Length: 297
Image 1 (tube, rainbow, N blue to C red):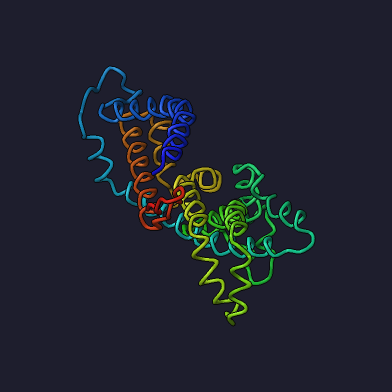
Image 2 (tube, rainbow, N blue to C red; image 1 turned 90 degrees about the vertical axis):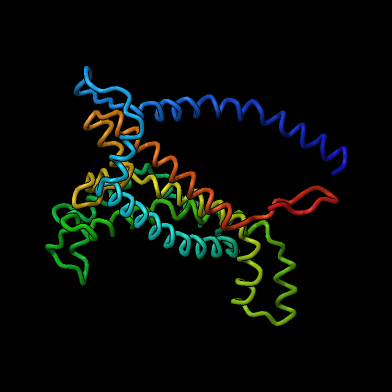
């Protein structure tokens, strides 16, 4: 590493230091306080009782069937919705990248769902599928008396469709940014060598899109893992549709049990950290180095 590279790296660290310190101050205190609360038997309905209980709250949560059902519900919604969003987002990004005319209009139209507040979008989907107010049951091949929110998996279907409709534009925009960084000369060279469109997609586009895919999948998976608004608006966790965020809300706000609720919050935080680590390790993206340096994973 040259002296200039070391100086540039040192300057970068100094410029980032104030923002990093501010982030640590803002985020570290709530995390530490939640950990402290999770080690106590603290129920606001019985303020004179309780005290330090160690890891008992974590044992209570981890041995509860409700917790594991909430984890399954959350993982199911996250995996299905992010998978659909990835396919649709890639298709939309390719269309926007190749659009010759009307590119601005196409991008603006695609972004409209993402600009709508999540709660508003959830209410729109709820009223559309409600048998009394919605229009979905009047469509062909759908029973007029279909109660979408009367069964567990039909409720999941509406929740997932609302999530996909709302956040696919976010996925498409991140992938579009990655497509813009790929050198068009690579495609021209591949065409000269006789590569088909499918071969160019799997041999050029996907490998070079890996960093953008990592960012898009990581952001959306973490966002989907904290799903709250859509479930709260449509079912409020009834019919076994409760996610881990709804579970934490019920413990903290509805039942005023700060000890158990904080334990749930800390476990969600650890799950989020684990997901982020798996994505970063799994993709193994290469960070470009300065002249003379080698790529670092």
